[in-house]
Image 1 (cartoon, rainbow, N blue to C red):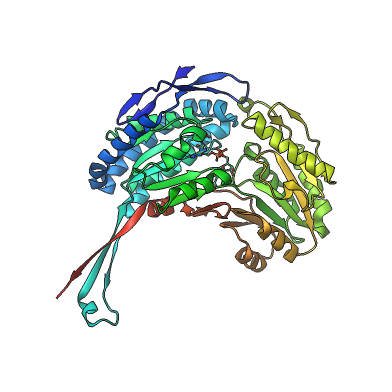
Image 2: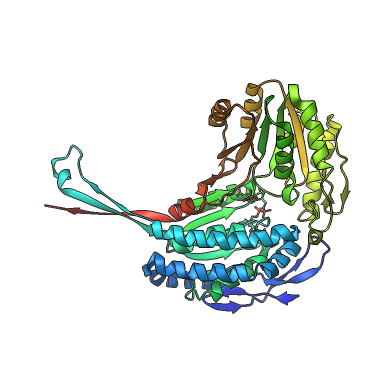
Length: 474
Ligand code: NAP
Ligand code: G3P
């Protein structure tokens, strides 16, 4: 139990108001974090603005050294940060430590990628006679002050995936961790602080998004908003951003489409892993199965067998299914299951809940009049929708408000590529579960799943802007 502080202008500072963080596993009191006031936010924003010129004047190579140091510190502490992370967001301890390790590697990759941000030059050559004597020297420059806001389910990785590309691109960062996950976020911040970043280059803001969120989004010092979270909040961020550039990674309803010629044993394993890892609390979780009638019974039986193998309980015993983030989320999930049951869905594995611990639930014969066919449960519940044709599958896939990822399971690759081209999503996986990684790949959502493209190189590009310097060569 510790009273954590924010990192502002190179100092660790407290606030008059604090928030107490409890573990969703057992209500253990983990510590307190500051609830920053608007005045304190202003001080941090001013420090960032002041630090920007000197930071952007460094070479990418010089900035990369700080990131490598931060990554080394993070890696050294992956066990202790992983333990806090597991307690804070009820993620199994192995996955929690792995998230911290993955983040250290992401930071290193961003440091290296930042050395390869190249400009270009263009010679005039349009219809105007004077054009041919002009040259444009095209460079990329930092956008300025980046506000990075992260969700609870990856409080270290989805923070580092914003912070590192922003910093290597020459930006300064205001980092708002999720409240449930803020201790983990501050421990990540500590790694950047101990790497020796100059004062003001990196600052943290803790406090409930519902209280301080609008103020930081609308803050005049903010040049870019890099947000990951739910679609409703993301839409609000988009409205408040005005004409400032944003990156939004939002909710998902990833479909796994299973055709008659799929390898059903492999498919069942991939789907269960994709749907139930971290109890389904992943934006890229498989959140619906669309299976051709001809193989639906076989697949349902295989899925049931795989789900029945899942262990349930304590994240520190590396159970597969752990308590979801809070009881209100659990009740939301329960409502979706009850609606489906009422409308005729068949429970292949029985629904059971104890407070915020929900047993993995596989629902068959789900129809499109059921809420669970369309809502994002963000929990360990998977609906099976049976379809009679590929066209029907495509229609249902694209009717979703979301467009993050999809998987298709088939042995017919030409058909898979054709189907992929018709899906309104950011990424299609062929014969594997939906997932964000590898972290250097482009990662994006369309429709209600977001705006802009993450992925290390893409994030650096998004948070740098073009500067064209034109001169005459005659
Ligand atoms: P959330 O409730 O939207 O919160 C996300 C972040 O936004 C948190 O830091 C939150 O702070 C902050 N926030 C809340 N209200 C705000 C406001 N008015 N202004 C500014 N910031 C505000 O999402 P979550 O529950 O943490 O994460 C689950 C959701 O995120 C799911 O929908 C999931 O699909 C999505 N997600 C998407 C991706 C992706 O890459 N596409 C990845 C992970 C999660 P507080 O914690 O203080 O409320
Ligand atoms: O929901 C977080 C999203 O980034 C999932 O990451 O690697 O588990 O697919 P991953």
